[in-house]
Image (tube, rainbow, N blue to C red; front, side):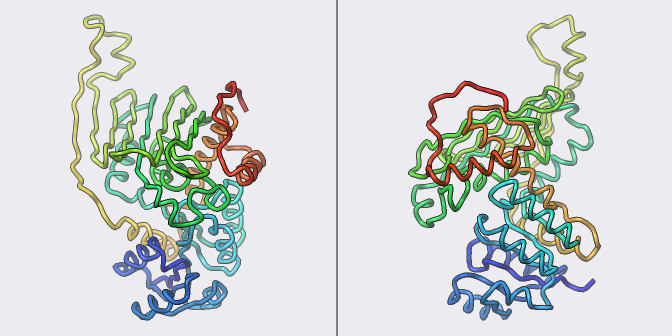
Length: 377
């Protein structure tokens, strides 16, 4: 099949360079040209790579050799760029998070449907071997019906990390903190594995950093059928920790810093609980299988490859706009809950959330953490 011609918007940033490296090894696509705000570094970068320079977005959209655009700019700009690209009839692959609010994501999805173009979201963690393995084990019912799931995505960011760029750590330009930016990859992977909850209760804090947005979050998730989940997400923790636990009737699936273990119960939990008459305090016996997959680098390449092959084959990419918006929906529910003291149903009320973001942009801080009585939305 003919290679998909790509352009990168925001090519001179760290993520833009990651995309360039990823595209270099793919047969499904080729890099046609680059666009970035900083013109000097842009021209130098394009010259070194031997590709075209596009000073403006309009220049990109007029190029007939470009079939699809990768948006690698900070996420507050994603919606406006994506809508222009979609209107031009070109396909769009947008970096995480998809946008700032669910209503913005809705607008992008509707526009892509109207124009009949592909809209993908680059959640490359789904393409890790560990994520693919966990998805496969869940699909095989290895864990059984879930009753509990937990996510810890805890990272460290220095104050200097926020101070280096004006948009970081602000409600006006980032639209959130640890949840929507640093934790969004893990949150997407978590909901991809266990599904979307019906409601969320969140607690948000600005615990350590001199920023407007949250750097520490705890949330309780409620799923259909009574299952519960938790999310712990922060940028204040040392050492870092990435962990997912999924407990079901047949056993448990645990990912701890990308090491995956499957625990299989010899007797399903409910059956053992109701029928065992011998030992009151010992759970059913289990066997454990450890999968040593190693640390994986370069997961942007398979994500971009899937998107380009989806265009060639006339199918949806693995992470469509609809799929990519789910983690943003969950982030919005936790944020709205944390700022109002209410249990928030999913999907969130778009008007309420947009009004909340407008309020936070004006106050430039989280609401007073004095506890409000918990209410239902």
